[in-house]
Length: 133
Image 1 (spheres, rainbow, N blue to C red):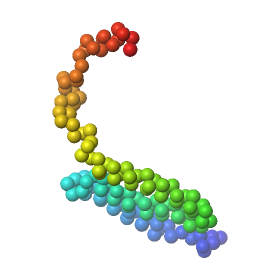
Image 2 (image 1 turned 135 degrees about the horizontal axis):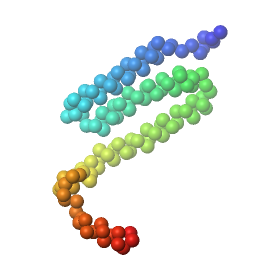
Image 3 (image 1 turned 30 degrees about the vertical axis):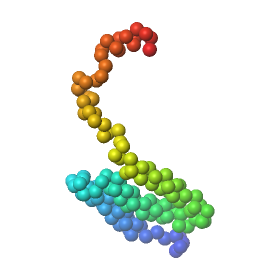
Image 4 (image 1 turned 45 degrees about the vertical axis):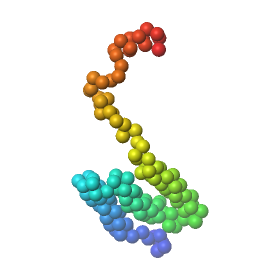
């Protein structure tokens, strides 16, 4: 017989996970059609924000952390906090340093695949083979 304290509202959890997933899909579809609306990093950040409640639902109910001791809960949640602490500075660096990106180099399109502007001669490849490198 199941204990009343361990009952899990499966339909409610299913609907919550379904709604959050639908919101993520709609957000991405709207963004992919109107990329001018918001930058990509903002869309990714919003997707992460929608994903966190889903992860918490899985942790709390399906991994049964709701019924565990507080130490086990802390051991399960600390990696999520550390992941957030690690990702946030990277996102701020991406936004801050975007103007210094290597993609903004003048004349970069000259070196596209299939172009004849590769910058070296076939003779140079044979000379390197003769030297043993």
